[in-house]
Length: 415
Image (cartoon, rainbow, N blue to C red):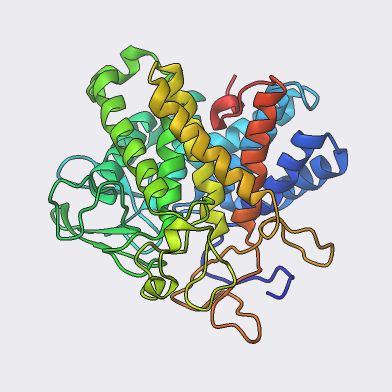
């Protein structure tokens, strides 16, 4: 608010971005003060997030902190230390298992339910699946009632498929608002019989419109999980339909969401907060010109752009490596267009009296949790922990490619 970070209690889902940003900053420029800040605060304050049973946000909090620190050790950027490695590995093992235990079964599988309760599947949670994948790669399992051993890869794939099947639309006649690539923020299930009931939204305009940060989570999440599958042996996937089948539905979701973003975002790559926001029509042909964060009708969300850009880049690179050069280049170039916009004014902060890095981010516009400057009718000019983290992360992603450093992935924390 007004250039200063303030707390807004809902769930504790952003502290990992706060300390993770410092760790990424060290990775980018080697300044040890940021490593000390990120590491000290992770050790001192992040332990409750490892065992937090009440949220779907383990991938946000713990991969961003413990995961990045462990990755830096394996990449040789910080000294090798057996005790520190064991500490980070144990943290990541437990985090993945705790996240996997937040489980609702359905007719065809199941999903990790959101903090709203067992009936609720959030599209955001696709990025928390990283915690299960890392825990699985560390050879951990979730042990349940009667000592049953629950495979974390299986849980992760089932959640991913539930997200692909219900949170993503494909233009196949599902309902009157079925447009290929759009996403629903929340999906509601009947927990008595596991049946799908309806789409819903908490932070978007409605269950039948597309909240663009939710769209961005899906874009980035499916792209990075497609990358992850490349390090998994075929035999590990055979019990779940096999590699070809899994990659097919995952790629279908990734391409659909990335296409939707390109088609429904202004030409500079920064979306408004919801593609169905009620006053967008007041902006005229807003898709044919750069987004305007200072308009009087609907706010933009730069944090959605930062997250989406990483999804576009990762999917573009993945497709080019698979031989689909034309589609891959299209997504890659779209990702670069978004980044080119975000790393310039008016989106990147150049004022030392503003604590944020990426400007024009919004949190929860329906609840009016976002700061509206005097004289304006919409929020603009402020930052968020997740926006600042993700602009750093995508910049680091590109920096490592340019410098021919190890390719940046969440699973590089497992050697």
